[in-house]
Length: 247
Image 1 (cartoon, helix red, strand yellow):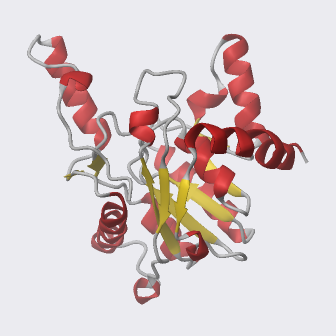
Image 2: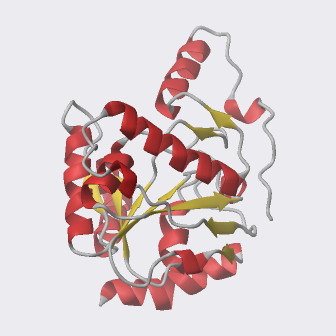
């Protein structure tokens, strides 16, 4: 009940007022049955915008840090994510990936929508990074379609470090569902998982028009942090990157 109140009475109208989202391809999201919605991840605002405009309930695998923050802000954040049905996932340690896959498969077995960001973290510079193969493993094991999604303009509306987003129009674009039934029973083969993930990331790239980087975002972030620590790096906000298209 609280989820419906939050989505349709509080959060939905507020987000529409702030971002005036242009929604494209929403008909590609199935009205019934299990499916994965996989998108790029540019801003903290993405966590709220996509669920607010999808008619069905969608469950995301959220990083555990959102549920363990200190103080009043931390408790409010945790309460919000729990009320929205989000699942905390510990991203540290060797078992992190397996735990995320188990949780995601549990959602899909119930015939529900699962939301996931294949990059594994927010883009710190607006570019699209190499996807992790967990989304492919879940799609093949559950035998469900994957709907690619592109958030456009949310990086400019709320870049890293900005707590209060700017009032700016954004676009949320869904692509045609991707079917991977030709790989049925091959979810244990690394080459297949990589091929499926790359096909998905290519679809997201086509929808978003971002610059693509064939490296994991977390690796690039670590490299840039090391560069800055050595005194040779520029701040991300000082760098020039191509603007995201709005149509």
